[in-house]
Image (cartoon, rainbow, N blue to C red):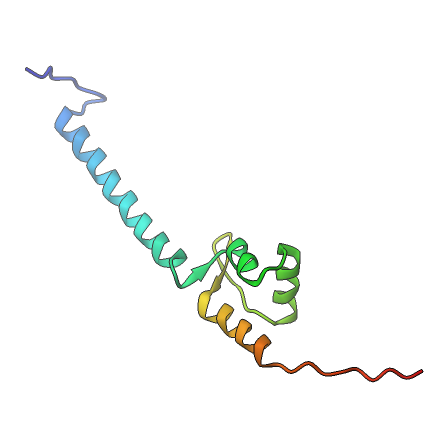
Length: 102
């Protein structure tokens, strides 16, 4: 037999329902986060690791327009297809010799 505990005027069933609703809301927020940070978006650390550069170098790439970043709230994210495009552009460029004047 369960004791009938009342917490701030709530029965156990009402408290259980509130907890269930909170967990459903948290799951919804997790799904939104997964959509934003899933395969389509990468963090700064993931992009730096992919490009094999440091975070300050990645910041310089963004400032120079080499790669485009997107701010979502307080986070800076990169679209994975734009990172791939930046990699493709590097591969397509030809190395040009500089002429030195003596």
